Image (tube, rainbow, N blue to C red):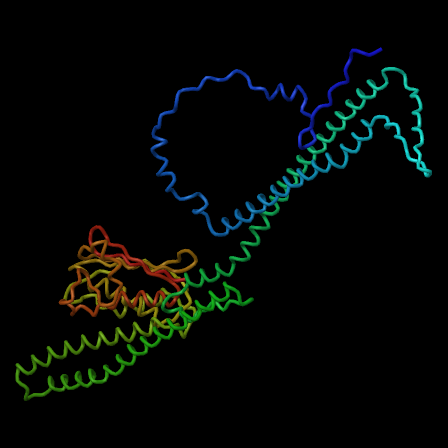
Length: 461
């Protein structure tokens, strides 16, 4: 009697070994087709696409250390994702081929076919062996097929669970190891860029008076070592050029002082000559003033060349005593115009050359008195500031355009480009002040007062 029931259909398998039953097909079946919405019209965002495309990427604004760290981390996550995907595919394939197929073959294998007739050694044909009648009850084959299908689905479900659990665990491990890789990438980038930081710090610290400093990077002869050596070689060339220029200025100034001293002596003797006429004495006085101007110019050039060199003497100096000594040497009545000096002095000790520091303060005071108005004022303030000392000299005087303040520190530069009224000085006073401040590792700043005059501050470490 033949049963009307048919054996359950074996579900088809996906490439990853997961069954695609009716529930999956039902979930994947498309629902009612959604009506297309209105087409979006290009608005301001669309018109701004080109501007956004030309904008600087966000990672460009970060430092090189951060960009290298992000690059290392991105490459690690990319390689880890590729490795994870390949591992997932290979594991799914191995489950399909090595496990599911073998079990399926064992469980779904039917009874063996009866052997066919075999030839005998005498040339005849032996009768076929009659199959042994099966002792299975009716319907056993249908039950076995049903059990085989249920077992196969259970095996496939467990294989899918194994793959899913492996994927989740691998993702967690990938994230944790990725965080560690980012930290290690930052440490590696920091160690690789540390010599560049040293080069940058040395370059920022350099000035005309500190060209003797070198990076002197130690380590393997790689690209960064070659960069540091090239930078040191450039500093050697610059130091030789500046040193040659300073020696030339110093030698020329020294050689010119002798004939000027001789000219001054001759003119002073001629003024003391009783037989000299009034015209001759007037001419001698005019030449003596011109000679004195050139002597001040050469002395200023010599002092400027010396102040731009490395300091040979460094010791603790009390700036209060230096300021008081400079005030005692100052002429407070230039060309008959009385100037009042206001003092606010506090003790401040710095490391440096006392002679250069005295010249620096004297130039500030002399400049404030010389470029002042009749009955004007000069304010001198000294105190500690930011772990160092600050000397501020402020004066009344003619208005100074703010755009010309920085140019006043250039050699031979005067207010409004004046080179005719040079009897007041050679235009080297503030240049010497800046050179001395730089040689001591400090700096000088100036600002124009709204009511006229200038305020100059020298800061020393």
